[in-house]
Structures are given as C-alpha cells and as structure tokens.
Amino acid sequence: MQEDQIAVTLCENLRTASYIPFYLAHTADYWRDAGLDVNLWTAPDPSQTAEALLDGRVSVSWGGPMRVMMHHDKDRNSPLVCFAQVVARDPFVLVGREPNLNFQFHNLVGPRVAITSEVPTPWMLLQEDLYRCGIDPSTLNRTTDRSMGENANALRAGNVDVVQVFEPYADDLVAPGHGYVWHRAAVRGDVAFTSFYTTRHFTEESRETCIRLVRGINMALTGVHNLPVKAVASAVAAFFPDHLETSLVRIIENFRASHIWASSPALPAHTFVRLKGALLSGGLINYDVPYEHVIDQALSSHEPK
Image (cartoon, rainbow, N blue to C red; front, side, top):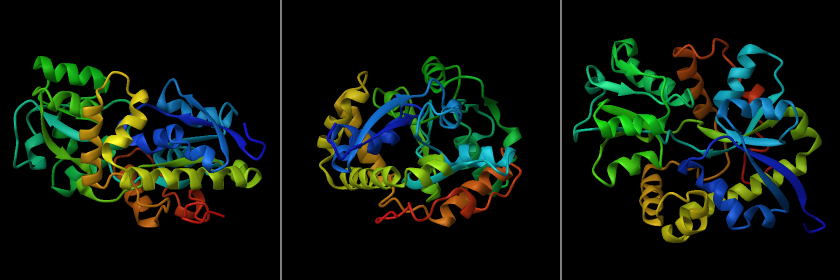
C-alpha cells in the first residue's frame, strides 16, 4: 500500500451485473487512483450488510437506501446514512416463457409470477406500478419463497410463467431462448436504487475516506458510460466466472440504453422520495423518513466535501 493511501473494508451485499461500476473501480484501479486500498468483503446475505456496519466488520457498504430507511423505521436514532448514488434506476427485468411484445401490467394477473426473494425493493416498486394501473397486487398468482436462480430454473422447466430477475439471470434465460423480456423496470425512471452507506460516525471521523470513495466511484461511472463496452466487460469478467464476456457485453449495452447507472454521484431528493413512496405504500416501512436524515448531501456530488 502506498504511504498516502487509506485502507478501507468495503462490503459487497450480493453479486449482480448492475454493480459493475463497483467492480470496475476495483479492477481498473480507480480506488487506488483515488488514494484508497480497498479490501472487498462479500456479505453472506444481503440482509446482513447493515449489521456488519454496525458491529464494525466493515466500514462502508454498497446497497439500497431501502436498508437504511428500514433501520430508521425501526429506530428513529439509527446511525446509518447514505451517500453517492451509483445505480439510478431499477435494473430488474420481467422475463416470460412466451413472447409479449405489447406488455401491460394487467398481463401479470393470471399467470404464475415468481418474485425475487433476495431483496424487497423490486417487489415494492413493482407493487407501486400495479397500484398506479388500478391492479391490486394481492390478485397476482405469486411465488415469493424462491431465489432468482431457482425461479429461473422453474421458468425453464415450465413451472412458472413469469419471473422477476436481475442480470445476469435475465440474459441467461433470454439468450438461449428459454425466456423473453416482457418488461424492463428501468422505464419507470430514476429511483434511488443503490448507493454507499455507512454510519454517521464514520462519515464524520473518516471523512477523507468517504470523499475518496466518491471520487473513485465517479471515475468508474465515467468509465461505464464512456469506455468501449468490450473493455468494461473484459475488466469485470473475473467477477462473473460462469458467464461469457459476450453475455456481459449484451448486459452492459442494455444497461446503458436503459440509463441504469447514474451519470454522477449526486443523489437527488426526488429519487429518494420515489423509493420511499414505494416502501411506504408496500408496507415495508411506516415512517416517512426525511431525506436530510439519511442522505449526506455534501458527499453526494462531483466535488464531495
């Protein structure tokens, strides 16, 4: 480690292609260029990331502001705060067994729909879409207790009709013809999907570390938007050993077209409010968490301070 580098343990909450900016920061040395020596720690389960922060196993995690809002819902004095948006839109995809070129949300009433169980945000946001279309989410013939991998296998076997998955599961189904994209949730628009989060104490006592994390991820965001797609795919391929680079190329192209990744680390209030509204309407939280209580605005910018 160079003398002026700061060591930090960063938590990966789960492995998914929408987190490619974090992986690119790791492999393209953007962390190092920002003055950091990052030790990456992968959580055994996404629900344990906040606990790992609170008990000191890690310094900073990436993940959904949803986790932070859930903790503030349970404890108004929760020390958790977010900074620097990275994934700016919902990356989940509805994949069906049969083609559906003119998808409408009413098409989900009747078929067997398998919802992701690993994280609650995608279902909360989909519920809001359904409500907006006048559909009661409870009317769906819904499976909720299987992993995305299990749901993908169930679709291949014909045991479900539609699955809600992220990448690379969607491409694994669509590329060989086992499924068809019905709907990309990113068309909903911007929503605060993924950021860094840590304790308020850490943002105060280790401010320079947080500033360097924002600088590093800003370099990575510039990279995922502007580097050749094949170069990005090659750089992060080691994080997806079971997938061909051609698959990663398709995924990155789709993400760029869908504006999945933030153009800068700014975390605007309206994207936070949209996520919070879905969590409230879906019953995941009951507390209307104020934006300024959980977002460090000074860190969430091109020039963090």
